[in-house]
Image 1: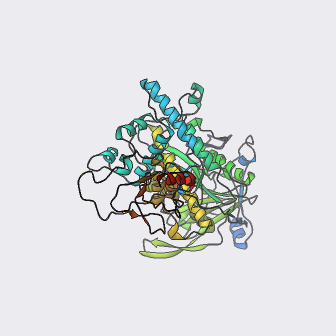
Image 2: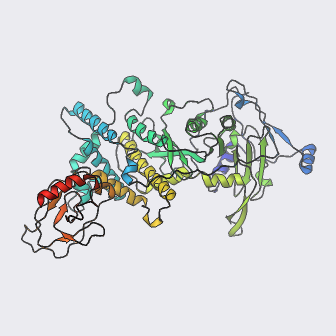
Image 3: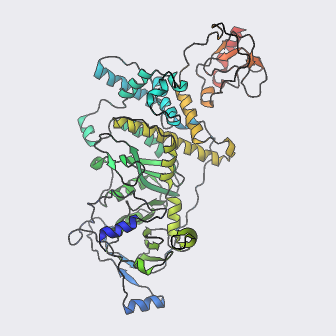
Length: 592
């Protein structure tokens, strides 16, 4: 059986932790100063016979030493030295749960402002105006407020999806929460000219292929880096930024739901919260240590941002034996699946000699690294610096021959990997539900919208964590759809609407006796203290006050929220506009 056949067998496995994310593994990577032609040999699945001495040692329980036959140089340290594997005991590490800080639950917009602060909208407005002036010689006159509305429309578009973008402004299918905020032509004008950087030197452009969106990347990443960390579980994997157009850093990753686009390496908590990311741009990607290859360089890049003693999980795209030894030196625990051609000639027991649920485990001579092969429908090899095979647990698996579910023993190392590795996949799943999916030929716009969706989704994960810490009832926790819509509403209502509140009876039609109540805006809009003006409406009958718990009726409407509120001395709008109470009191007294 040759190398390709063995890899095909591994790739066809139906284990829940197996995926095809590593088809783009660096094919040119070899260990430095390796003998021969610098090719990493793959272990064979052919039967391995032990001699009489080894058989006797196994039967009597004595240690069996199996040596790696790879002798690397020492120019990169001890991680390339000869490794010996033994059948011996290995102590699993114990990790304590994160001790959370009690923080109040904020509004959706308060979480997003940490990723998209006010200065970001001002920068976008400045660079967009400069770019438009350079190309047309005209003045665009966009502002930070208009940039907020622009991004707010994209947040809403991700939730309320039309087949074509122009349908939001069409006469027949017009969607007012979008079309009433900004005209169609203005929206597309801003979309075509959107920029975050203009005056950049040629040297920066040469060394950074993402220079057009680098300021936005820095804003979002700085917030991710400021998230509190503890010695807990993290997962590292690839994330795709979908894009089908021309781009020199575009990648193809077979097996991904959206395989074509820009590759984004991310590190998540086991719950799905992103704490750091790095968009791959080829040789110019700022990896600090590339001596072990591309996959290990990603791991070494991210573990600098987490405390010592943390446990990191990753798939076989990243895993090598030298990487595991490096993690031991850095006092960070690692667990991951590993490709057979990275075992450095070491041979496990053949699949034909293993039953379903069997596993074989060996430990390095220094007792720092454990390596395990487990047989399910197909076999898989994992390695870890903190977990071993025991204790095993029972899982239910479908048996094709018996045509029923059977109980299969699963080692502890595999069980922990399945439990903690899915943080990135969980985040991608949630972001994909309401992704701002628009067709464009400009990759910077795709990256900008991806970072917007990433920021909103990450804000929601932070919100969920705060709700959990504060033990908020489940019925009071906003789901992702409601969370996004409140953010979109707050961004699109950044300025008061044009004063078009006129008498509704000018048409000569009889007044409507029963009106459906207007929806109450979210707390971000209701309590922002910005342009909430009372307006006395010419109505024949007052309408119910929308303040919670109030039973009065009023003819006074808030021009921004379009809700009626009473103006009694006891109320005085205090439940509606807390930040503008003195100003509103003055207006009320003048009206009276």
